[in-house]
Image 1 (cartoon, rainbow, N blue to C red):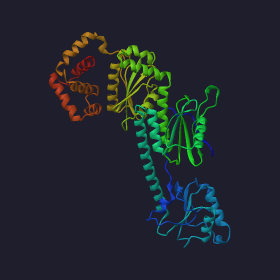
Image 2: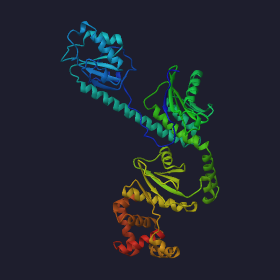
Image 3: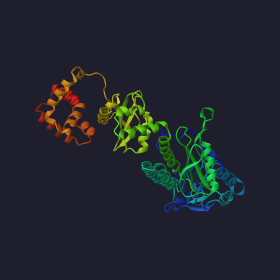
Image 4: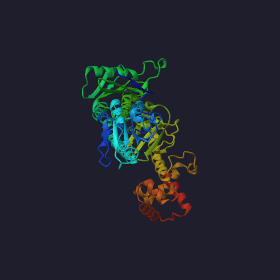
Length: 506
């Protein structure tokens, strides 16, 4: 192997920074192809694989301290002494650029020099540094701007590739055969081989083009680098990922979960800027899939689901999910519709694997002793603690709390569970009163729900429209219709109080 690179910790379903690939470099040939710049390479290798990570202008005699590596260094030769051509100045100058990792040198012709010094051409040719001639009509600013535009275009293309890959991987994870489907998608997206290793090091599943035996063996050995020891308490911590190269093939491995021992391995002929991000998304999905199918908790959840489908009441199934009451959380992302990866990450952040993704809302069943906190990028509505038989009512509470949170632009709102004035009235009497008062709205749930939302938001047309997802004129029409059917004045605070009491009890 040719130098293993590792990263600490393990890949797990816990929330992390957004999956964004680094900015890809720009091929030097792409810059030379710009006709508006009229750049011309006059020395150094014409390798299509040479890339630049930026452009930097310097007239320092020694630019080494100001370079990070990978730059196109631009100079007009102001720093060149008059007798430079007869000595070793240019060899020393070029050697410092090469030592700093500079990708290429651009020399501006005029106003200082009428032509590129011949000794500089020779030094660049000797030391293998590409030398570009920048014509008088091309400013260094124009070159730098072209570099950044090319980098922006490359980054946009890479982001699009990563986004499409993430969507396809999420769709694959929802298939009946999720693990093979995810591996197939990953191998296609990376144009290589994707392998899932079990805790004992054996290949559980694989997809993509076959690799030579020595490459397969090298990938399996690399997987051992990130696989946790059987007794982690007595073993040092392991990195989350590692990379290597074997026979020109790029290898990468990713530890899955929090110590189960599963490892994702990838082998490919190339390694693009976004490949690590794509593989990391696949690693999170596979961590969820392997954790679900190979843990006691996953087996218990599977048993609970089967029993519910076969007709068992929730209170009999609840012990399989853990003792105690639960909170129902409804969550909606602020930017775009949630996907399975985002939904699972939210569940992990809230401390529960019981996650349901439906339409644009994610529902999570959370133990009552874990108070949900606001989550970046999400709006949350939380129910009151509920016993299993009360879960359907708690689901409604969470939905209403989410609607109210979105209307008032709050990151999280909880259903009020404290004793209220309504608790002073016997439940049977309250329900009878509510049915009688709301009888004119019977059979018209849209009107009743609109009135409930409008009252809860203090008569705000705009906020009610946001909460219900309808136009404000629709809210006005429905509330006016309620007033007419109820034959009452909705501007009267006593009327509003009575209706609110009835809507909560009815």
